[in-house]
Image 1 (cartoon, rainbow, N blue to C red):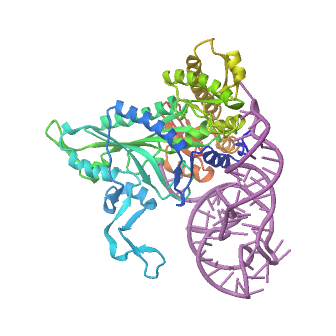
Image 2: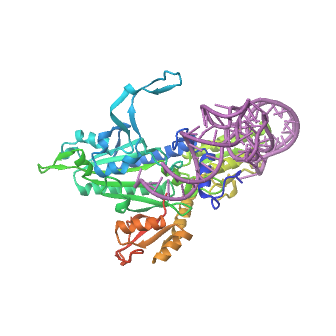
Image 3: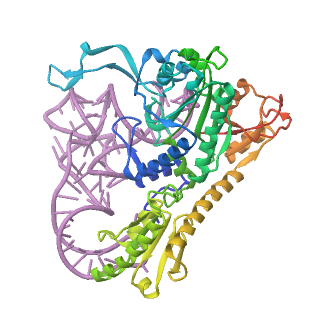
Length: 493
RNA sequence: CGGGGUGUAGCGUAGCCCGGUAUCGCGCCACAUUUGGGAUGUGGAGGUCGUAGGUUCGAAUCCUGCCACCCCGACCA
């Protein structure tokens, strides 16, 4: 129905790119790899932010803001951290431009070279830990529970709207604790917050787990994550929570006086989710007609489209429409009334389908006469005629929104279940990966060498060692060495 | 960063091999008829052919550099 949106089955990545642009979520900017997030797309992000922010505060965190620029020397203080990020940093070397003498425009003023170059933050551990040094002296200053909403820059070689962009928006939490146990509890807690957000609000089922050493964050002792499965059978890392041990405390000399009178390095965590969640949201639920949004994150949950001939008829319909809107708003349901005369109803139907509005209400003279409204669901593309004396419209719509939220989750959950397969031999592993993709649950000997080899041969990586992994003895799919449980493999974004 | 492809009106495109100032559709503007699944007719506006050079009497077309996007690879919490 939608004019020429590519089919998922024919070209999944083309479908994704076109959908992002046509649904008015984002577009490319003149700068390579950077995106313009358009108002409709940004309002979805704002909904995500609002909910996550609420959850962070509920768990005792407060927001702060640290600078965009980081002195180059900071980055090298934590050895594995610099190794992980050095290759993708944007660097500021000068602070002034001047007019070119030949009148061809502005050039960098060579006189204005910075003594120490500045890195545009790829993540803020270094600048934050250098600040924490001054904030923490005693166990009384702990725990320190801070989050920031910010933009970061990573000079990626290959970019895709939302999934991997040069600049992206995210939140990064950075906490400091007196004990390893407490820091680890924080790391687990935040992974759980992310999982809860993904499942309840994004309607996205996720697997909670631990990263293998290969996939661990640069500078962390342990990385926990939530992994989701997209409709093309590829996995997407949706959020990470890192236990930093004392690595950054040691690199930045952050010590505290313990209750017992000793002096110790503090224990740290960091955790983040980014605009990549937008990519996950789009790919998890949408179809060949366009976006499908879970009601809890839709910029507006209901759109009312009037069907009329002439102004008098519109006026009559608008009276009823306004009444419905007031009822819905009173019930906490967000609604838009599209009474533009510049587009026809059919055009609007297609438009709101493309944009994933969960419920569309059609209201015309026939409805006024019969005391009905037409309710169309985006997720199932079904329509029903509802008699408004049957029950209050707000109650009907409220119930339906809840049902949609649930069913979208259930659909994604079933899809993941169908596409998570236990495999027990190397041949089977390669075959399933090739023909069906999805998550592969398989035994692994626990070594980086094996993981590396499997990645090289199949492009599949260990997405995580699931938290609910069952202890089960078996043999590594590749090396045949003994294994104590299955891990989750997949090709990933 | 390596290999391949693409760049022509807001969007999608023809023309390029074989050089002579650009085709078609959607969209846009005006008017009329329309309005329960992307309306129809008539008239109209809109172009540094990605960009900078070169070859030529003449370049969208041939040559070179650069930029951006897409695909594959490498890289990547």
